[in-house]
View (cartoon, rainbow, N blue to C red):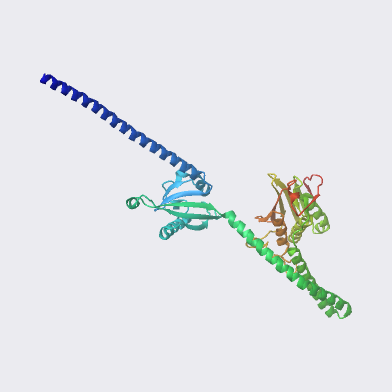
Length: 424
């Protein structure tokens, strides 16, 4: 009985041990599966987080990329591809200075400054592309990215640098235009003051000189007085130009067809054009409807034609082309067959009192007045590179029902029949 009961006890122990072993095996297996599942979920979350991060970076409106301490590219988004003209696959793992040497030098200095100052550093560099000259400006914000995983991990992981690049060419151009506008406004106020102060005494001088011319009989004295009269009239011409330059924009604006304005201006100058053997050719595909002041726009084309007549002293051609682009703006190209303007003078022609004409033949206010009127109509004017003078002007297209709601609008339809190309 004792042996039997001992055998039974062993069997019971064996059975219990077998059950415990099975439970332990199941627990270990379940634990391993749970750890594997957790690791899998962590990797899945990591991949999703990385994908989300990449999507955010790639869909960012500004160029974002990452460099290591040696300047090697670690990350490169789509905006960076477009800004620098370099695909991601061609720059990853390569030094950033390979894109352009100037960028590399500037980035190295900015990275050193960011590490030394322990803050973001902003710098502006010329925007360049391979094989091309400077065509803009670039803003770079360099930030040091330090690992926060503890002292040991920071020692093992080198720093990285996140750079945000932005093309600021248009911003710089806008700042320049605003500066020019403020300068022109100041010059206008200054000109108005000068005009009011000088116009009255000049009129008295001219009247006195004319009376003196009638009173004297000596030919030498008459010639001297006539010289005084000519110089005084020249001064009055300058004063008139100053008044036109400083005159505020016309408040009465309406629906205007530029084709009609140009034709009327040419008609007024027809005799002078024929006398100087100058032919004006028109190329209009549409009437060019804009919202503006007719008198000021006539002054624009009158000044341009007057300059062309001075440039075409021996005769020549003037071509005026007008197109409406994308139903948003009207382009007018004014070109003459003269010698044009030299490259070193192109940047000064819109400055007040600057003229390329001989002494006594120009005041240097014609083109500044043209530029002021075009800008006040929401347009833009620029001198294109060409042998002759070529001015490209753009105006906003007339918007029915919207422009009339402006407080300075006087609704008045200056309509006429459609225009086609012809010559005068």
